[in-house]
Image (tube, rainbow over all chains, first blue to last red; front, side):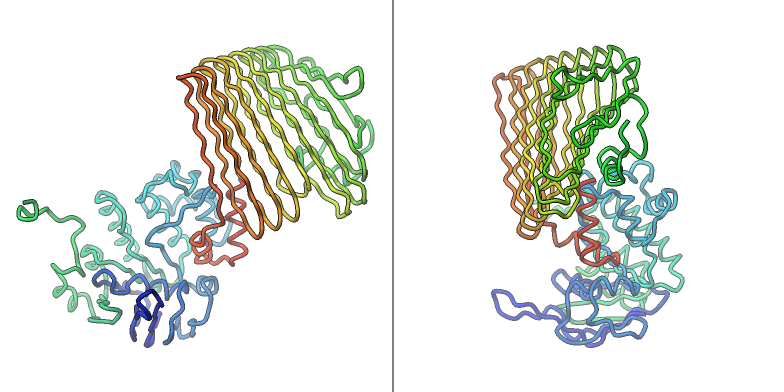
Length: 247
Length: 308
């Protein structure tokens, strides 16, 4: 279980001190998929980075299974059971897909075990296992490999930052299936997903709306989602161009 | 055959992956003398009359055979210049493994300058693997200055893999190649320097025949206070294609100078160069740390992958 208590985070930029996250408290219970949505610039990605330890909060606490991990490093949090899928997966020259999956699993996985993780995200393992994680892979391919590394870690908490960002519509349909599958096999673990895609919100147990760095709404999907449909917090992957817009 | 000591055996393992006497033709040179030489029916290794090196003659049509000619130096202060000439016969297809390991525990500089000349016959093909390695904690430097000259006849093909990852203090590498029609040269260089090491690598590849091609790629890492210079020049004087790439990571106070050069003397010459130098991206470190690696482990993995 992940618990955020009164978390706040500011940055100093040209315009002076800017609050990105203000007094956010929320709980991601075991066995649940919690989706965090909200308009762009509302602080969603920052929240994910705070949980992974990439950013440190100015105040408040982060607890994982009751332990205060607020001051732990990225590495220590990862070892305690937090996985984090980047919104924009990182490319590596020379490192192969197999290397990355092995590093994620923390052990010397057999080739066939590593392949299972790729198959789970809809990639033909034979075609990808030896590929370098470099610019030769498309955005959608990288995104799936990123998800495969999270699967290979198999930790108690998995955080996904806009898993649908930057991928084509066709891949998005497949990705939803991957998450539905993850949702079914969640068991004791929990998933925190940053997304404003309606399709993703529809598979969440709970939905949190983050707006201007604050929690604007929080609750079961059934109670929160209906009010979001048609707003920037629950968008369709593709919307037809209005005739008026066209003109 | 001269008995090799444990240090010499270790060096042989590092530079030529040799755990025992290799199969096929070989010559092992230890501290300036031959420590064993074997020719085969198709590959003849003979010392030059003036004792300056070896002539390696590979008969036309020889397939799937290998030649090992590693060199090890364990005597501090030893300086040698060796000329080895390879004559790869028409249509032959072989693997050539060279490499030099220096262990210097003394105060004198140990230096091996190997001059390798390749005469690639028509339609012949070869893979050449050369590893450099240095060890020993003496104040004497470990110096390697390899010169490689490649003369490629029609439709011949040569793939060169040159690796220098550890322990060599000073290197000045010069590689020159001349390619006739249809000849193909591929070079993969991997280099890591640390401490106060200095490594210079210069290439001049003349693409003289129609349909010839060259692909010269260097990946390198410069750590600590080391310095590297990569100077690759392709000269296209026919309908040919050429590509050079220098991709480098700098760390600490490392310095790298990349000097890519292209010269097109024919309207059908297609030449490309790419060069990139930079430190390890912060995102790469963070990604591996989110997988549970420490920053240092992440750095090692990134470099290992980069130089793989």
